Length: 480
Image (cartoon, rainbow, N blue to C red; front, side, top):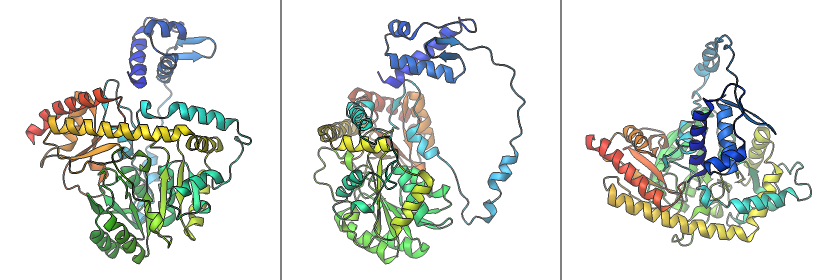
């Protein structure tokens, strides 16, 4: 059973028990709850924390948990309506009003309710994360001399060197900045490269978190369609000419959400078109370390073929480790590096040194290569299981491309199908799926859904999740 599910189930049981207690009454000890419900101490601690957050119990270190006293009369409700004017007062003067909307990101971050199978997850399941290796690396890192001091502003030299080696040898360690995860790096890059109101070219479909970054910065995302060979160079050239854009954001390897890899014939063309437009190409190389076992040799990052400073490269460790292991490289060549560095410092100062030291310990240990091999084999197996189950159970969902890397499948709905209705029906059936609409910066050509196979416990959950999705399809697609 998932730890998250165990916590939710125990919290539900304790809510019913708390009703029987008088205010201030002491609940059984954590040890007694562990024995009574046959769960781990961590599960008990998290369940009690959930009840404390709801105001049902009060925890006192060393004493235990107690039923909370009744809440006092609520304070008079203030009037916050003035904020509507304050937050929109400058909108009339902005060429492209900022839109701060995290809903597309939350679709893959929010935990589904207990008992719901998570086809919407954006990270590895706990059973696939290198938890023991990360814990050991963090323990060793904490004992390093100076580990708790301020790190160099650009990041630890050894860590910058490690990331530089992964860029195909074209980037020097001095051209790498360490950032707190890919989202932070993309935010820094877009803020550095495009002024508010400017157009920014994006793949269509593309990662919703990047669209949210652009809109929050007052930028105007302009879609450039992607097919199974990656972004289309002819349409990219047309988009540069029509908009005068100076930034193009691209995921050339296992693109999110399509899983496409930019074909060898298009790589040089995309770089040439971007260079001739006098623009930067932000390369989001987010899942290079989530390659499947049967993928074969990977193409190098685009930055390996760039000698003129066109590419701004982003590569994170987070997807291959844990959502909380937020260590990323932001690499660039030329004067733009100083602007990236300045914005990174202003916004974040630096990535905590213990986390950087832990990253060095992890990637330098034998456990790292073992972990990557295990994940490569497991993701291939899960991809195959989900693909086979979908072909057999729900053939009306079209799967135009089966990726050899990454952690999800991108499916097209039948013409006329109601995407939102299917997402809602799936949740009622007990499976969370990700809608396709947030991946498009303009009107989508059809309804889509994204199904993750990485955030699951294993084969049984994949099979059960597809069965539940079949139930939802029976409810919705019959009316398409």
